[in-house]
Length: 101
Image (cartoon, rainbow, N blue to C red; front, side):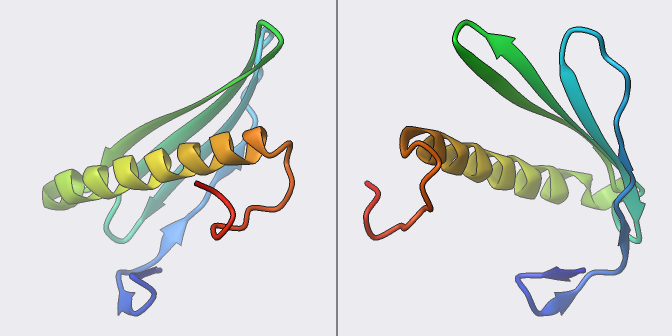
């Protein structure tokens, strides 16, 4: 993996699983790596009214690097949620940042 597309930060294992849930869909990335010894990321999709609720839940253990990685993850997932909302508002047409306010 590379931070900011150029700074090598080691290897990361992405361990995709689909835990069994009866009331909603779940995807789990039970990952680990050189820096983040634990990266347990759950994605939940649940019916809500006439739509779907999307939720990320992440547990991170990276020793002394846990706080900076937590801050990065918070920013990354907040940005991704913003992009999902834009995509939904555009009825899943391709995102083009020049046209989106």
